[in-house]
Length: 607
Image 1 (cartoon, helix red, strand yellow):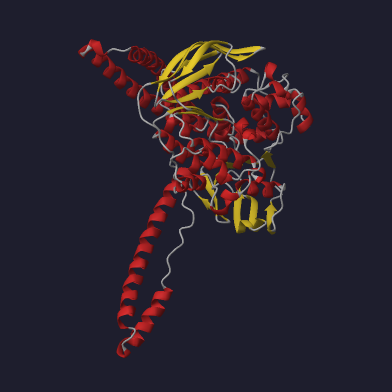
Image 2: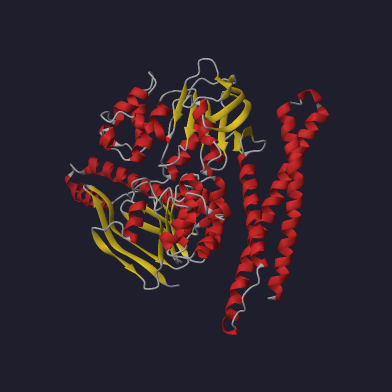
């Protein structure tokens, strides 16, 4: 396997802050690497140094003559008034048919190609940037936080593409699930150095935890030895007959060194001030219409929730999730109907636009102290500030000098300290590293108040959501299943759409293949068949496991009704009907997938 890129002993500092100190890593073709590390550790800086946007203060970057590098830019290279096709042809120099062919991988086709980019939702704009990157025919991709602001469908499309991509890539992401599904190796950036591990992110974190436990055990032994030697020295150093032994013991003690554990990936702990626990109604809306004076987004929204419900608001970008959240936060006037919060409940709202409300002359600690509930202790404020990476003198920084990410973390920390019974969170996980994301999820899970939140980080949503609201095609409704079932249904839909697209492609008559390259293509086709069958087998196992779980739950609800008809509720009936429907769908899907797998097995045997 050829080495495409070699990072050799690089140094990088911003003033007194050292980012890299003698850091090295080699990247070969076909390596699928997930990059992790705390905010500020240097993940994005490494990407920028590799692609030449920034320069290292020392060290070298060696690039192979075979390297074809592509970088998913954080800034937008397009103009909002350009159509998708006009941007792609201008930016890449490729013909329209080539742009359309690559764009189809991300379902950019037909009328979307003729749409002005400014009229597309954020997820589609990211698809446009991905297409422009791939049109350069790279063999190494650098993706810096590609999942930010992506809806679930676009995220799944990106995963499907990366799983089939034959080149290598380096992905910076705070989405553990995304890294787990796409990357087979892990690069941690920590304490100025780079550590490449030959396993995915979960395997690496397990290795780190085991390593940390071994170090702690070793350090406990060293400290015990030191304590024993100190006792001996204290007892005998004044006695002439033992003075020589005491000096020997002192030298031995000086040689005993503990191992510095550095930063632990699992040491981020958030403590959110809790609120009074009850099961009273917290939110209700009746025939609510949402949108803008010139455009209605959704109508007839009717639902209610109790205190303690944690509600994930899900749907494709552009469907109206943020419009719904802004409306119930009172930031946007309802077009019709009504909504109300429970009596006396304090509602706190976090969204990207609230950053503009920060006082630029205030400092971090003053802002957090002003937002904190009256009984919140100063130490509790400092602890939470530290969890959001405002440590030591950082709490004295003025708001005016904070970066966009720091301001976002500051607003979120202030909201969590406010002791609001209701938290409305629009994309709270952006600008957080995944340790902090997961710590936030664990902390909110134990929060006794009501939470409505929009997030695309699947690990975070799965940790927190007890209820699902889906925003889709002008409606806002409860989803009858849990989040795992929602993701599965979306994955199945995307997969089926991709299969149909492949069938359409196969209808076109293939060009004759020269005999000299036929055997190579046959081997490549065989590898693809084996890869596709392996994925099908995994899906067969997933569907079977899900089917058995659904059947068990359906039978339990049926038995409850048979034994005690008075225990029947509307929610239980909705769940029963939902399970009955998806069991039938999963049985059909299991049969279809099994048949596909058997067909592929025959083709592989014949090949």
